[in-house]
Image (cartoon, rainbow, N blue to C red; front, side, top):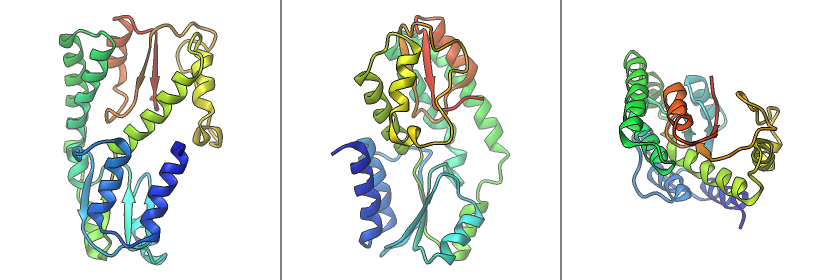
Length: 236
C-alpha cells in the first residue's frame, strides 16, 4: 500500500476499535519504524478503552474542551506538551547524525547542535509547561503527544518522493515534493526562500525529523562542507 493508505489504516484503526494510550503511542512509533519513544513525545494522561480521538497539531485547553464536547475519549497532539516540551532540546542530537551523513566534521556538527540546544533549552526553561496537561487531568481527558515519530514518517515520505524524481535543479526537488498529496492540496506551496529554482541542486540534504530545522548555525555547517541545497520543513 502507499503511504496514505498505510497512514489512513493506522488512524482509522484507532477510531474503529477500542485501544489504550500506550497502543496509540506504539502506532506512532511503528509508523516511523522505531521502538523507543523519543524525549519530545509522551503519554501524559493514560486511559483504556478509547474508541474515538481528536487529533491536532497543536493542543491547548480549548482543544481538550472541544474533544470533550465532541464525545472523544482521548486527544492526540503532535507538538510537545508538558515534560516533553521541557525535554524537546534533547532530540536535536539527530542533527549531528544527519550532518555526519553529509560529510560535516564531527567537531563542527557538535558545536552547531550545542548552540541550537542551548538556545531552545533556555527559551523553554521559562515556559509554564504543565498547564495543558494539568487541564487534561482536571477534565479527565486522556492525552498523548507524538512529535518526532510523526516527523520521521514524513521525512521518509518526502525522501522517497525526492529520490523518485530528478534532482538536477532546485525546481526538480520542488516539483517532486509538491506532488505529495498533503502538499498538493495545501493552500501554501513549497517555497525557495534563499537562492532560486533555476539553480543546480548539487549535493542536497533533507533536514527534517530532528526536532527543529536547526537554524543558521546548522545551515551554515552544511553549506560550508559541500552541501548546496538544504531542504527544511519550515524556516523563520
